Length: 108
Image (cartoon, rainbow, N blue to C red; front, side, top):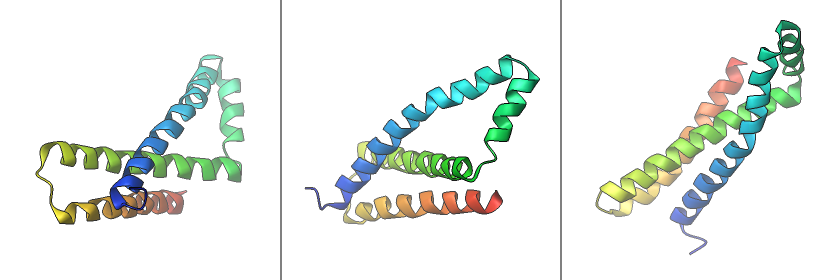
């Protein structure tokens, strides 16, 4: 059921996983620039000071938190007996993901 809380938790977990996979090549590129020397890495670090990149960093942290919350939800579904209150775990995971993202944004 598309209106069910579990569906939205499932969708958030899958979408965050896909977006994190798409982030990996950029991460490997950044690591590779460090292997090219200090000048190349310093150039990359200067590029990361742009506001759009800072916003993207915040998005990565939120995606990581959302994916972690979704993974914990899946583990709970696998190993715990189902209860009606468990649908609230999805909402709590979403709130925790946004809280982590906000804390990261304030720390920038």
